[in-house]
Length: 384
Image 1 (cartoon, rainbow, N blue to C red):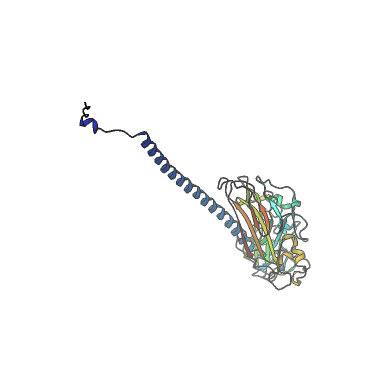
Image 2 (cartoon, rainbow, N blue to C red):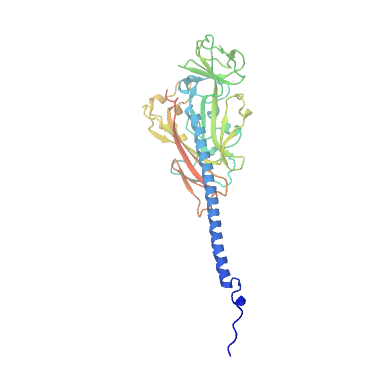
């Protein structure tokens, strides 16, 4: 006897997902969700890398631009140049800040010449050993001690350069009467602050000294040794020092110090300024004219400049003016290593190595993005 069929309602009633169907649905959902998350993470990571690269590029380019602006004016003394200038400073001139007979004062970090390898410190301390830099024979064998008074000490392993020029923040004034040779005063259309370094120039020669008084009559501390007719320019002398110091965030940074506006007898009146953060290294080479042809013969480090130009007849020391080797520098090559804040990139398997003008700089093993930048800068006022 056959069993009766179930009612139609029982045969066609709704039923739920089976376990297999539910697992398939969950798996597909997880796959889609994972793909969305992976896309988001990838886009966020790419955005972070792009942002870090942008910061690094900005820092590197700004650092070079700042140095370039100052270097292009190196050696400019009112309407004259350091090559034709007499310095009668009453203060004991130190090469870094007061040697206005040369357009530049360069200091080479030991162990960082082209072909050398140098490893950066993860937490760079300010360096107190001035013997870690060397200069030309004319400037002495080590970094001038005055760098310790310009608002901080440079980090070991980076070059230092001082640029001697006319202060760009004020307009020059003009003499209004003849100032005879061996005089100590010039009448001008405006006064200067006491103890500034003032240049008086007739565009053929110039004299620089500390000013002892203010007012329409500018009184020098020492005799001018030359006659200056009415209409000669009077301007403020300036020295701009660039070095790598410890920045506000504890990392390397590009610093600058300006002498102009200070009391000539006290370098500590104005501290050095952090110009660009996260600049870890600075390397400089000097393009010298070794033959008197007013063109670059070779690029050398700061300590090699004096010997390199020894055969140039235009670089013979002028009596009473001091050394002139850096007046035979035609152009300057500058390279910097810029970095991002930590966390910009994954930790690499090995430290990165960067070539800065032939010097192999090894970066610390960390998660910063880095890039090297370099520029060749022509000088306008040397060998003239």
